[in-house]
Image (tube, rainbow, N blue to C red; front, top):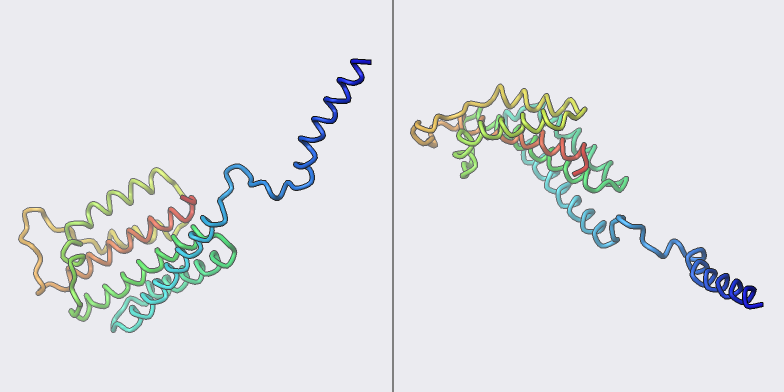
Length: 204
């Protein structure tokens, strides 16, 4: 008799534990799943990067002599980022949009190099000294990651062709050499774009 009562008590207890789980599993967050607030933040962040890429695209297309191949690539990357955003892949959308922004900037910089006219900021003067470090870093990431996006390698190769690194013992660049400053800045932007694409591909 005691055994039957014990079995009945155990069955009732187990049912009390399992029944709510069976009725409302959707209300329980899956371990490791992002919270709605984090998804919303990621979506807003991606939206801002998409808007910036669109702005840089318009800006680059207004510059005489901007590189047409890079403008076309920027357009393709931006379209891809928009599709990723619409499908809910916000991180990939954000990184692809950032890559588009960098490519547009490089296209504009090459136009500036051709015309010899640019609104020079510190990033231009830093570029001849920065480009060697960016080449080394990007090449190392490519060797480690070994992704399957051919655009990453294409951007690296183009940057390598454009790079005109300055010697550490050379005198500081001057505003008179806009072509050198803008070309090196374009190379830096392409290298950064390639790393954004690698992050988009690997998802972190």
